[in-house]
Length: 352
Image 1: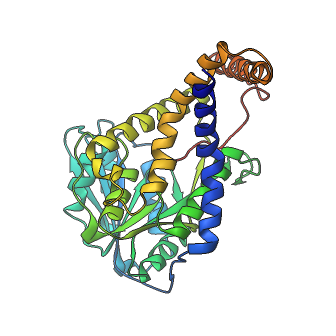
Image 2 (image 1 turned 180 degrees about the horizontal axis):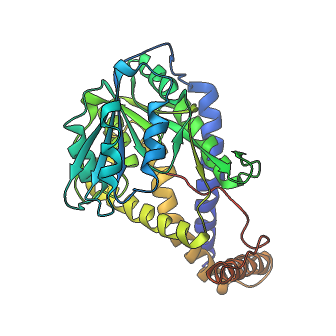
Image 3 (image 1 turned 90 degrees about the vertical axis):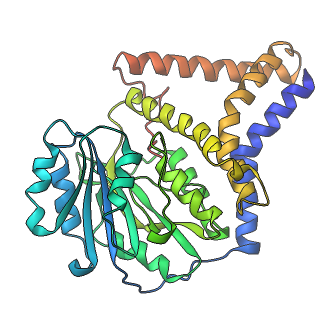
């Protein structure tokens, strides 16, 4: 049992602490900064939407106000079988150049993206959701990365806002800061293992049609770019803005979908697990696969600890007990709509 305990413990420590430490060293020894420069290609913005009648107008106006030459900008609303009249809102802006790709049936986001890509003419494709708003300079910042011929995809940064103050949240959670630091280091070394769904871009020629059932396009598309021999980088200067999920339970649903999508990713792109095919095999294994296995490692850590209650193991068991009791209490508070700031810290959890 001691062997099981320590292997589980070492694995968890590696995923959350050892891997970042390794990235920090590699960044200094083998960093490959992106050769970002002024670059103004034609751009197609593809906005995926289902039933978004109440929010899509704000997004369209946001895109029309971007600091980018209008003659080089194509905006496509990729509608996935809306039933609330979203298409009528989009039609209002046809004279301003907004185009619509309309699927009469609700077949999923990936199907809507595939259909929209048949209309897209830009050299660079920017994918976006309705909810998040672009910074006026976001497209210029993204496209500047493609001046480097090795860059095949670029991900922007999602900034969480305080709705009451109209400014970026000052209490952004530790986990999100940690995740952004990881992405920045991965990007500096070679590539990130995924993108921010709210704002990411690829070279048009690198796009491949997505299977209809795809759950996390913002990981599948960038990883296909990496497998094609190009880099997928993270640029914190290309910003999109959002607010924190309305409640922990809503965020829980999104997390479950992301987790399922990561398992699906391994089925769709099994070559990601082959070190001679995947240029960022270590990053992918440590960041994506490692995160998938951590729950099992936590389980074996706890179970083995039950049989090891002497000496230092008693301390480990006490710490784990407090952790799980706090988590359970936090879940019950959130389910009842009661805030429990000590047990459930306010974090910016919206990570791709």
